[in-house]
Image (tube, rainbow, N blue to C red; front, side, top):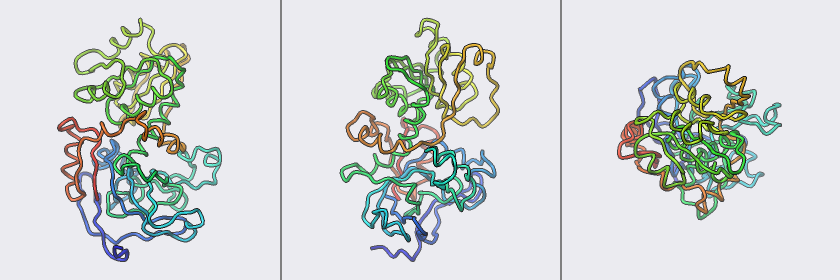
Length: 355
């Protein structure tokens, strides 16, 4: 076994656009926490925004900060009390980013992603955002922030449990009725996972708006129609495909002002918009249409225990993950992986980091 009292390598963010691979002490698990070896991690679409400093004082609250929150690995040490919940060294687990208090009104209602103690690390840790994350050889997570994974689940696939569960939560909030038309705005990994979740939940036809090679992947994992917004007017195309009515369920995964505004305009009367994309700037919306058409606009943050339900779907292929994994790099080449992810080089979608 590795010397768990020594040093490890980690991607450390020192300030906006200033990160390096540093030697840092291996963290120690506290009460109800686990120390895990990170066997695979994935770059999330939020990470580049954090690295650029687009959420100042929020993600992260201060520097330095180890980023990363999509991962899978192996338990190597357990903190006090974790063994009473059945955790032991050698367990294969995957991480999720929120470790909530478990006792506030929101947590007791099962909405731990909305824990009222968010921002107070004594009660709630948001790994890779305001508390050290998984771009490292080892990571510490509370037991509420991990899930056991099947022995035969490939570790790279398991690293996607967090984003897939978020996609499922976002898709559920779109209020899909079986047979409905569903529009997914955004062809990044979240959009590609959401379109598959929409199919699982009974969508009749899924229309994906995006661009480039990612639309080919969208078609290969079940999109019925794809629209390249760089080549045509997405709103006009959606209305054309839906007989001028729009769609009753819109899943907004792009987070750009134009995409969010289009979501309102292409939503059918009485429809629902579920938005997971986080815009950097204020976005004016057509409130008149929202009111008169009784459109439900719902935010979606992280997930609410969807991990368990999506694992069988990932294992049997109902939710395809492998096609989205396009590149793999060691931790020492994180900068290269990030550049490829940001620039979509070679059709990059999910970039795996192997610490």
